[in-house]
Amino acid sequence: MITTKNLSKKFGKTLSLDSVSIELNKGDAIALMGANGAGKTTLIRLIMGYYHPSAGSVLINGHNPIKNRIEILHSVSFVPQLPPPIKLSLAELISYISHSSNVEEKLIYHYANEMKFDITPNLHKSFFKLSGGMKQKFLIAISLAKESQIIIYDEPTANLDPKARDDFYRLLSTDTSQKLSLFVTHRIEEVKDIVNRQIYMDLGKVVTDERY
Image (cartoon, rainbow, N blue to C red; front, side, top):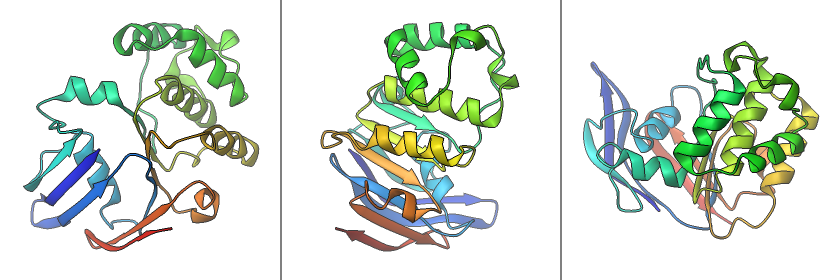
């Protein structure tokens, strides 16, 4: 599903990602780990098409994430570590997502309820003004409602309380054999029961890649 070949990224003279070649396949549930500055976020942003590679290539289902951005966005759900500064109301966001990504609005409400976030009284609030936890729950609900082939979570539980974390992982524990799930995390104990592969990065390289 995702293939990188000798993928590198420089920022000025700093090499953030150093010739990374990996294959992430359907049925993989991956914990992507490493210290801050190891290259994890750079790799994710290259996969999502936010950065242009300095060298090498990345393909998602055979598509270039920069040249074929629309196709990629339809097949990938992404929840960033820091929620984007979106100033639309929740009602406007739900309408936009429903029409642009062909997502059923009732599914967004369903998954939000599963995350113990009641959308209805917050419909006319700006996403930007929600608490960190509410933003994260809403973004997780959207990611699940999209029913994408590929889901990428960058520290998805950073703003969640322990109960919300339990709800999140409970929702993910259903059959994922037809999906690719990638979790950027510092909390391996949280995802150890749902991942079948651990990739550890350091200094822009993949140091270990273990399946189990």
